Amino acid sequence: MQMEPQSEVITSRQRLILLITTLAAALWGARSCFPLIAGRTPHSVKYDLDCIWLMTGIEPTQSFAGTLRWWTGAWCCDFVPYYRPTTSLLFWVEYRLFGANGLQGFTLVHLLSHLVMATLCALFLAELVGWRRAALAMALWELHLSRYLGLGDTSYTFPVWKDSCDIWCCICYVLALWSFLRFLRTDNRRYLLSSVFAFFVALTFKEMAYTLPLMLLPLLWYEKRLQERYLSLAPFFGVALFALAYRFWALQGPGFRNGTNGAWWHRTVVDLGGPPGMYVVNGNSLPIAFVLLLIAIVLSRSRKRVALGLAVASALVWGFASLQTGISMDDLLYRFLTPPMWTDTFYAGFFLLLVFQFLANRRREQWLGYAWVVVAHIPLMAMPVGEHGFYLVAIGWSLWLGEALLAAPSIFGLPPVYFSKREEAAPSGNGH
Image 1: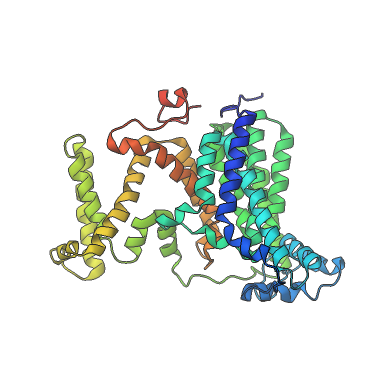
Image 2 (image 1 turned 135 degrees about the vertical axis):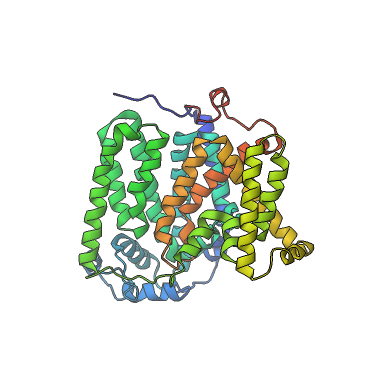
């Protein structure tokens, strides 16, 4: 049975506006690539230590036949054995095209790959949540605005070409999600097969793709077809298990893994909890206690039960801050006289207000965005990766922040922003 599309129909003009704003924001966010591309003198592709390591496996490979070993063993960097054959192959093709001093060409491919990813993601989100939401989320993502809330600085994905594997993997990842969305809305099994194939290709680029079967769960929930179509996830889990077993065989073990020395839960709290999580992990929970107390005072007249709960939570966090610092709760009051405490309180308070409106408004798009964050963050929990690892995670945060901005007027007692009369009639849903 063919399902009616649950998002608005996008006109050619709206699609053009979306693509223009998306590409403009993408170019601005990746502008650090421009000096390397426009340079007149050749530069070595060995930009940093990781690039040097990658070249140790690429430079000696003189023929295409030599690349076949990457399909049955470790990728082009023997120092850190991962299973990334397609990534290695594309790096090798770039090296054959541009040479050892072809940094300009490598960087150009890196930039163009990002533009392709941005375009595909914008079109996918437009079909999923509407073109206006897609434009807002993509602008937040491409301009790396989530970094100001400590939610991952994806600007570090540029300009170094070594991080192209993140982009190439995300391209296949988004294509798989998009095809699966089409399958849910048309019941055409060709889309299901294309989604499985895109997932398989993504696995050959980078290990972060293993989370895709879990990412399909919130997509099914958002489309309200979880109970009806949950069995359609079986081929994805099957491919993931097969790929994992084959990877284990190819690498003769689990491969490279450099853990976080037991600090995985610290980074998880920080990455998923934003500024409040950062303060808790860093032993500075006092600003959170103060913000909770202020909110409790504001709500004491209109919502007494909520205010009482927040007051109790404030006292508990205050006591936790005392345990963290070894300072009595009374002496902690003197910290409110210092300017850094005012800054920390405002920083934590702003994010907590966004969280409260998130819980109060119950926008399905915002819940979808946070589910995206949680699932995409799983590979980062035990890996000491750089900020480029948040390339996929930040898309979810951008969708979450975009919805937070639309709902922000409700903090001041004003009606939230809606994009259709259907949404306004059903504010706790997604307007479907």
